[in-house]
Amino acid sequence: MSATPLAPWLQGQLRSLLGHRGHALLLAGPSGLGQYDLALALARAWLCENPSADGACGVCGSCHAIDVRTHADLCVLMPETQCQALGWPLDEGAQKEIDDKKRKPSKLIRVEAAREAVAFTQFTRSRGRTKVILVHPAERMNVESANTLLKTLEEPLGEVRFVLATEAAHQLLPTIRSRCQTHAMVWPTEPEALDWLVQQTSAAGKAVDRAQAQAWLQAAGGRPDDALALADSGLQGATWAQLPQALSRGDWGTLAGWPPAQQLAVLQKLCHDLMAHAAGAPPRFFPTEQLPPAPRWAVLAQWSRELVAAARTVEHPYSANLTQEAWAARTRQVLASGAGRRDG
Image 1 (spheres, rainbow, N blue to C red):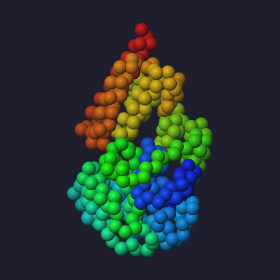
Image 2 (cartoon, rainbow, N blue to C red; image 1 turned 90 degrees about the vertical axis):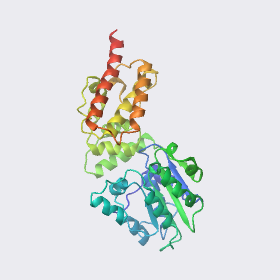
Image 3 (cartoon, rainbow, N blue to C red; image 1 turned 120 degrees about the vertical axis):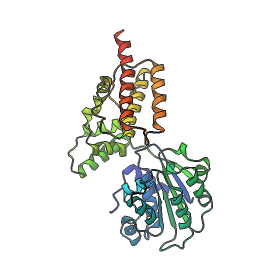
Image 4 (cartoon, rainbow, N blue to C red; image 1 turned 45 degrees about the horizontal axis):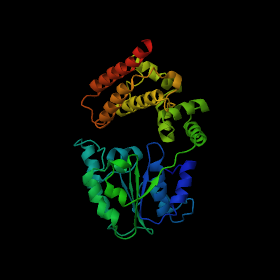
């Protein structure tokens, strides 16, 4: 698995960050801006045998070892679900437990993995000048795993560098944030994001015009990685644009097969756009002309609070089917109140 070229807005950030001297970097920003890609590019460059100002050479033994996920001086600290999705091997013991159906892959960074990362810093370097620990997404550390890593993050043994990537820096312990140099992820310009999105979808064998790419980018709130995920899901721009009106009719068909977290994200985007529209601001995710009439502000504010509360347990729903039915009914109720205002 060879490294894919960095997006232009990430390449510029990489070039800048390679000049930093600190031992711990925190890449922070909302989802879809490329935190993981940038973190891995930094790790590759730090470990590369022939690095340049633009990053790793891509052809040396170190770069190849990272490509095949076997570099002895790189420790990747992730939830087990994320490791599986990105092709990183699990610890033998953890893999056996999962293979034997003793438990499911963890969605959090387990304290056992954090302890292994601490032990990793105490081993002699295998081939280069430094060792690297990559943590992604860093907000998936619970209090115990974060505290396990804390002292090593503050005073690592020998030449060890950390790069933490997060989509929710506010969820990190303040003591973790204070021990890192924080880098706020840069948003691409719209032309940059559209060019990249068209290029990525074309490389995957999809004939995509700029209008369709624009629809995905709007649906993702301008976040290119999230827009690419929508493209990969097969969602069509017209379907997305018509979704608010469908939900106002109680039509949940488009969302029916989506995971609960994605369903909830759509409802939060719709709530955001209705609040923005009610306040006289342009919507961010949906076309203005496709939005149903906005309910009263108090109704929208209450709905927003309910959606935020639902997000706390969305990955562990009590019953996915019942949750989905409740969300569909509540959404229709909220949107119907806006229609009632118009009719009145």
